[in-house]
Image (cartoon, rainbow, N blue to C red; front, side, top):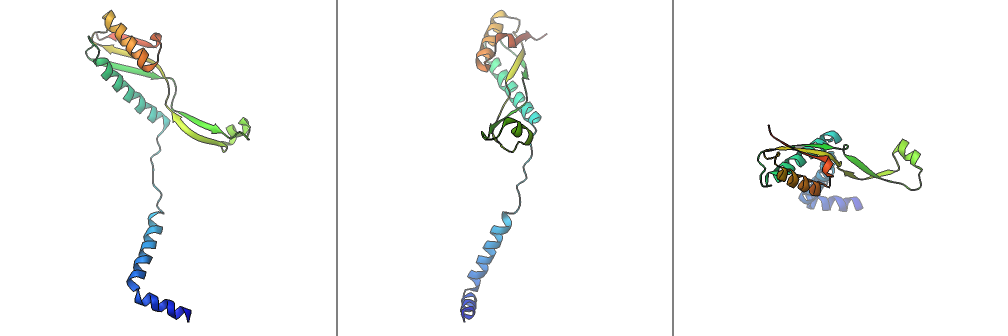
Length: 152
């Protein structure tokens, strides 16, 4: 008796029932495809980071009075660094071997080890001092990590 009532309701509302089934099918099948993401290697990420920094630094150096054409070479200390949070209940040896108790918090871009700037006007002591001071403050580097040279 119950089945007859259900079938009669379905027959009366066939269109609504079919749309509901179609909607459920779409929901089920559209979520099954896994998104394919390209894995970026730390080396290529660092290379992109270095190139972007070199471009920004070159643009900034061009704005200094007495500086013409600029070429920048940037040296990074390491590759990209993964920062993990360790589960306090596990000992560090277990985490190092299995990696299962560590949670990835973030990636930290590498520090700058040194910078060389070759530019028109690089032989002028005032320009050298201005560029060294600018780069030292902007990049948090010692003056010994910065080299300014003139174009030949």
